[in-house]
Length: 295
Image 1 (cartoon, helix red, strand yellow):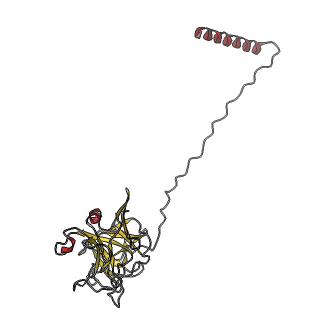
Image 2: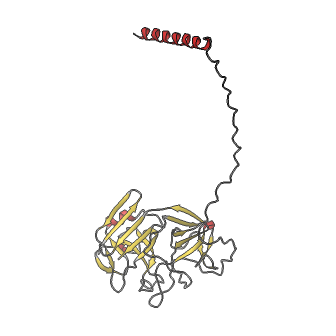
Image 3: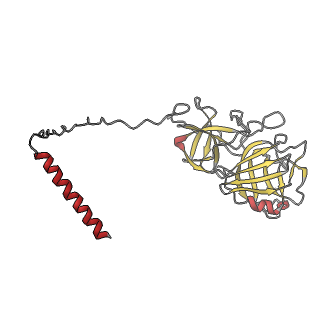
């Protein structure tokens, strides 16, 4: 069958060529008109263009040098009325964490002013990671440790500050903890999903309430001297009591999430008391992890 098709096609082609030749040379037939090929066109040489300039955001850069020696150092013991409070305690953070990239860097209350404190690369009683709540081209606003004031007359809410972006290292940390005081739930949120840590826990009494708003994990550590923790790690938070000057005569009133035998109801001085299972789920969260404490 295939041979017949090929042969038939050859006959058709041959007949077509013969017919075309007869038409071309038949007397009286018009001579074919020659078609001139169009002259090639040349496109204009493209003009190189510069890459687009990235859009700059936020306040202008500050490259001034400062003597940090006279400035107070940011740590959990600091009380400084020049430290600003968290401007949006119920807002979500950026998912970034800032680490000081030098031995000490200046902290600004506003990007347009002079520094009000210094921040060490390895702060005392802290993991050195500070969650970013606002990020611009040349500046980042972070949550800090320390207090603006001391109760009962001073304001002990969560503090913040501005750092020059060139003086920090930024890293991603979208992990966060959500504590809901009215629902009595704690959730750990990671890139893998949400884990229910607790369906009940202990919280602050009316006289010593658990501070609400956003704060962060300073560090996770075992404190053998605090025997009520039964050797379990303590998740230390940056926020401090808003009614107590200090715990047990100390100059700080740092709150925490920790184990306690009694871990239900309004029974603490502001800390979140949980069972062994719950603290076991939280003891690997990195410093700088944001904690949202909701009413």
